[in-house]
Amino acid sequence: MGSTFGGINTALSALWAQRRGLDVTGENIANVNTEGYSRQRVQMQQNLSSVKARSYATTDGIGEGVRVSGVERMRSEFLENRARTEHGQSAYLQSQAGSLGAIEDMFSEPSDTALQSQLHDMWDGWNDVANNPQVPAARSAVLQQAGTVTDTLNNAHNHLSDEWTANRTQLSAYVDEINSAADKIAQYNDTIVQATAAGRPTNELQDQRDTQIMKLAELAGATATERDNGAIDVFIGNSQLVSQFQTRTMSLSGAQDLDAQAGNPLVMSWDDTGTPITLGGTMGGIADTLSTMIPKYSTALDKVAEQLATQVNTVHKAGFSADGSTNLDFFSGLPDGTITAASIKVAITDPDQVATSSTTGTLNNSVADTMADMASVYGGADQTYQSMIGQLGVDAQAANRRAQIQANVTDQVDAARSSESGVNLDQEMTNLLTYQRGYEAASRVLTTIDSMLDQLINRTGMVGR
Image 1 (cartoon, rainbow, N blue to C red):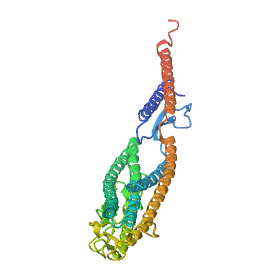
Image 2: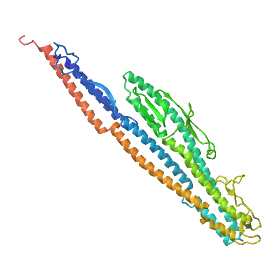
Image 3: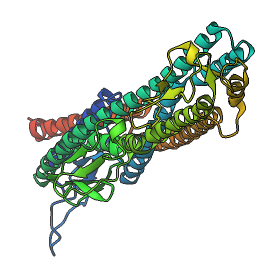
Image 4: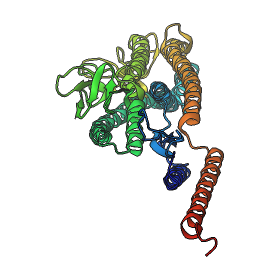
């Protein structure tokens, strides 16, 4: 049978275990608003009797109290992997939606100061010239209106170029963040593996590591796989970024501005092998913006400028101006004759060189009348520009819708993660009372045993003295 003194150890183990539970509960409450913190839970096990069964041995089989076998970190690996995937996809779609929104803001359609309105004003100016071909003021006005159109085309290209440059700068900064975060994860792996082997707790270190991995998931669509020794390998695309304690670095190369992008495309690659990297997350969205989205609308804008110049120049060169000039281009571009949104400008500065007539020596309005009708020409600059703006609106709306749907999915996954690893103050207060009552009861057991021992030691055998 068990010793009377054995109960002291049982009560003492209960005191220590309940106190440990109180400490862990306090830690949870203290970190209720700490980003990345995972709720912890004390694991308690019964201490079995140390008496081995032998032929003549006896034991009451009660055991020897309780022990804390560990402090469990409440995280679901499945939910964590799912969250990384969903956060990466959400960041990718948000990046695309943001870029399309920025491009929409550049064109500011519809508005009185946007290109469509300015094209309309220019065609109206040609209509005024057709009504009054002999009036120099009408020809001066159409030159001013045409200059406003070319300035708007130039500025639109410059804004696209500035947006491209800003995105490239941001992408380059993100590369540095990726390389830095990879080093931190490798350091966490080293510390966690060593601490785990030594039997020391690593819950907080794992929380910090998971925060870095989630950052990589949002930045580049990273995924992770845990090893048996506690280390985590991190992947971007199908390539390893972190392998236990080793890391790889990446770099960005290619064009420094939008106009050079066609002949020198941007490439994200591994430094050790030069292999291109398939990016997700925010960086993947930016990479698509740089390589596809902005060049697409820049090319479309160039087409608008080219069509505008070609249509107007074809009619203008065939006409005659007030001073008898003919075969004059109304718009010009690069020295080699190429017309782009960046280079288009009005080639005529003298109102008397604006062609209005179909024959020399007269001031009929046939050329100006043809110019005014170009606003509704099928396949003309106006229609091309309207088609581009319409496609931009459709793309932006679709991107926003996809981003919103993905955000809802991500929120649902985060809610599931929070229910698993988040701190619930009501639950923690319940645990607090549970451990408090357990501690008080263990204290009462210890007091009772002390009273019994006092009776046994100090009072037994004193009767009759």
